[in-house]
Image (cartoon, rainbow, N blue to C red; front, top):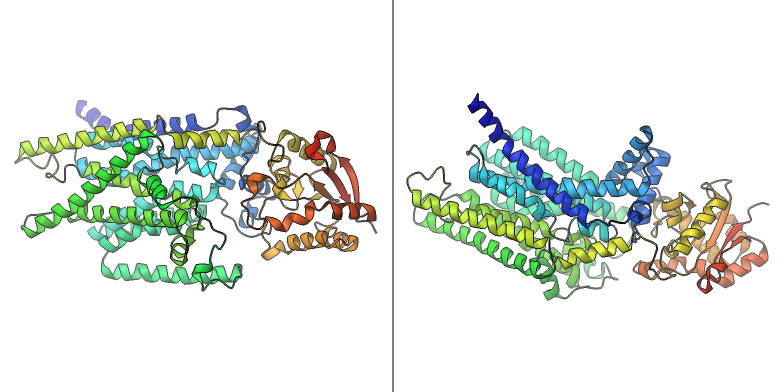
Length: 614
């Protein structure tokens, strides 16, 4: 009986340690999240935030079928995050609990970032840790690493915190959160191919996880490929390597035709002209600093930098030891050496993409970073994928530089003790690094302060995207118009929050409604308003959405924090007071509510009804 209980206890130790480690990481994420009540009752005020709230509302309004065409012009946008948020609201309604859209949004982010991401990274790390004590009953090394690695996963500001602070980067961020599971399954598949065992099982697992990640955001496939290319080249038979690259070539051709068919441009064959509005936001030295510190700020960042350099040295040393062993005729572990080389190459590829995305211009950086929309936002999330496995592997390799596992090396007890000691020291150093990264991590703290400030209305200039005055104007507007009437306004002045907060039927519910597919109505409305012709304005606006009333909302200039939108000039006609006055004089615009009483900044704020009756 005692033996049975010991076996059960030993079997429970690793999952228990992993669970404790993930819960510790969740506590770190929860402590970082804004602690104000506004975070649960107001929208996040970022450039893309209204779009995500709009997508959730559209699913709630139209049903799950809306997930195939979330964009205002009825094109596809990855809906996994929004489906999850809508599901929380629907379940709450079923249980008689009123869950608002902001709470649902926050809960999905907290669950995926605080639990799923650390668990995925821990699983990915276990690919290497299981080799060290896989035959041990209690697996002390793996248990220690499972306690440490989840908190290491949330040490960097790059992910998951950057996901909420930039954009927010919801769809791609969710795919990034799920990616470690796909990476782990892929590596296990490579093992199965090498061992000619359980291949079908791991093919199914890898394919299903890959489809899940791609459903979260299709472009995550580029990140997966970038990280897996070194392993493909060094681990697979040459026939499978050729097959893999043939499949990649086919996908690239299909992607090219998709882009040229959906987004017309004359610059596709001239890479130097791609992303012509791109401006580097870091110098190369600064980009390398962010990379080597894993985007950890303060003294902890330099501790991280030293750890990364040591990990690179250990990986290189392992490769050198492998080749020396082969030359001398001794048995050497080629698997560890190949993994060392693969992880070094993956780290260098991540470095290349990140530096190109944030510091360099020209045709080469355009090609390298183009798959991630050129800017640093998405490549920044890749930095932990280059660093975390390298650190974990270096700790695991501490014994490989001196000999085999403790339990196997029975003929040389002294060497086993040295290996165990080296491994223990490495674990302690990694634990110290993780603890240090939780204190004085200025980059992560700054992101947290920014997110908290963007979840409240107070303390902002009156021309920003959402202020107490604009919130009240939108509230009064929807009280007058209802949620069915169509409201035309420049989304960049903050009116797009009318959809996010009050479920208003805004013609432009997001800042970039896009003119492709069913988006011709957006261009037509902008042109009609700019024409100055009452007949053209009414003739264009009135048929939209059938017989529902049509309104125009004037609510000030475009917010300074939204000026990064390249095509913001398309909304300039909505700010021309001479056009508005002319339409009022002609009778096509009828003032319904004057909002100028809020202050001098609200001089021309008003709600107008578009006269559509014949």
